[in-house]
Image 1 (cartoon, rainbow, N blue to C red):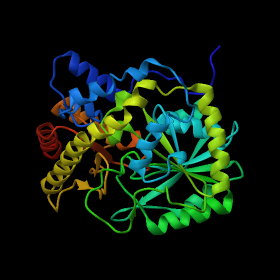
Image 2 (image 1 turned 180 degrees about the vertical axis):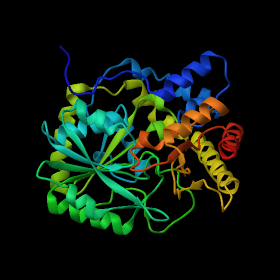
Image 3 (image 1 turned 120 degrees about the vertical axis):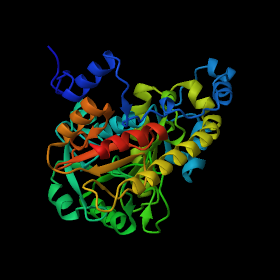
Image 4 (image 1 turned 90 degrees about the horizontal axis):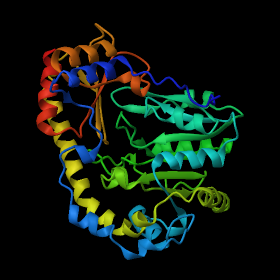
Length: 381
């Protein structure tokens, strides 16, 4: 009696079962997977955030499908675009859902990178479209495999998803890649969906990087962001889409997105009124996250010896680091052994669709003392 939109296998995996059993037994687990900023021992300006939500205007409901003008203006200032190019959603996940509805009919395809965040297949399935993957390749740094990307395009392809910087590889798109992507998308009448939630967390400077596709003019483009990463406030449930590309296409997309938004009217009034002040309050949180991730990454680079069997892959930004482990056992076995014997929790690369073995993914958001002790145990193992 239930739909087949998702593979409804709700059984926990081996790593989840082992972690639950250890916690039940009272083990103190060093969790190197923490990605929730509100649980990462950061200092939040509580009074400033709570005061922002106590706006009496929130008592009046005046639905505006694309978002309140004041809220859109605040996002536009952050993104450096005109407010009319902004549409508000409750999250990046909802942004994807609305764009899949906008661009695809049932059975159409969306191209997404591999490795990357493992949510795309679920979001696409709920909107009756399917994900086809194109690979990122690693040669002392990550890059797009354009030959494979071209081969992946079919008559059912409607959009190319880009994650910039990628999660979990932390790789930014380069100028040459963006130029080629824009030309490819225009040639095949495809949209570009650029997930830019981590673009405020770059490690160092690189003039080759492109941090946003908002300036792309050749192809219809949607750039995604939100309070979850920009301000470390995932609980506030507010995201946005920045529309770009040819003016005529952009206008048509905007009208259709407003109709979708009007159908759901999901963005809360209080968070919209509070948005300018939440963005201001989030600046201090973002600085702490940047300091934490950069400190952990710098330490990790020194902790792994040049001749170590463990290799830290190049990372340019974001909240994660990827380790290439010796292929003496599978990455799942590495994770299970680290958890069972050393009480260290990490994620296996296959969670993110790494093509080969053996990779482990660590969160750089982890409090530094826990991160260092966990890495020490991992390297000793």
